[in-house]
Amino acid sequence: MTRIFFSCDVHGSEGVWKKMIKMSTYHKAKVLMMCGDLTGKAIIPIVKSGKEEWYCSPWGHQERMHSEREVQDMMKKIRNQGYYPYVTTEEELDELKNNRNKVSELFVRLIKESMKRWLNMVETLVPKDVLVIVNPGNDDIPEIDEIIKNNQRVIYPLHQVVDLDSRHQMISCEWVNPTPWKTPRECPEEELAKKLEDEFKRVSDYKNLVCNFHAPPFNTHLDLAPKLDKNLKPVTRFGNPVSVHVGSVAVREVIEKYQPLLGLHGHIHESGGLDHIGRTLCLNPGSEYQSVLLKGWLVDLPRKETERLNCWRVEA
Image (cartoon, rainbow, N blue to C red):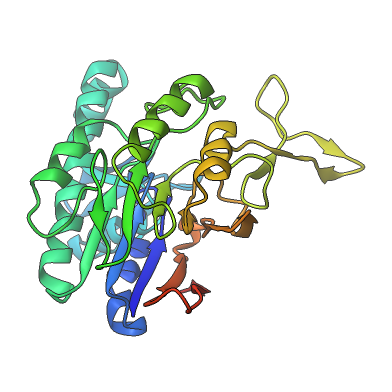
């Protein structure tokens, strides 16, 4: 039996990534998947202010360090919560504040260095007989794609069919429907529908097909998010947040049309769970990466037609 561990929306949390790569050992998963929104959102400067003195302000208050070991501990803490630590000087920090281009260049460099470090962990820590599948999501910059493609140990599943075993193939799409944040890989529903149809053209057997689509299908238990006002603030009613469906109509329509075996989704952190669209089981792990909590699904793919697909939620 092929057991998959599927997770997503790690958003730069190195602690979550380290937990993910251990799932083949803990749960005997033969396929590890971290698919969508791999990278973090900000740099946290650690500023050297004296011979044995550093400071940073990662969570709204200043933290001070008095040794190299304390600096390393702070860097680990920052990485675990999904940010990129950068040791710098007062002079360089002033220069960065006044040069947005340099900040952008530094951000891209730190993202790429982190991605390479993560993939090196796979090479050294994951058993060779385990399939490791990694792809970006809508939040991720295009510069990381070549890093994943060029790594010999992991599979970059976009724009190709991946054989999970002798019975089950997988197609993938990292694009999502429009969001208020104008992320790098989002597009109108009409364009997304074309991208999805192109993926289905790669296969002929839909009955045993797995769809790794980052956007969850519209109007399910997997796509509920807080309703936002024009200032992107959550809307409340009687003190309680109002939720709305924000998933993709295009994703729902292709699932209804082709009825694959399994849909693996993410993107909406608040909506971890499962739902069915016809015969298709759709899963979203959800995400609490800033708490360094790994959330995922274990899925046992059926070995023959008479067996059922089984799944369990996992947190670590």
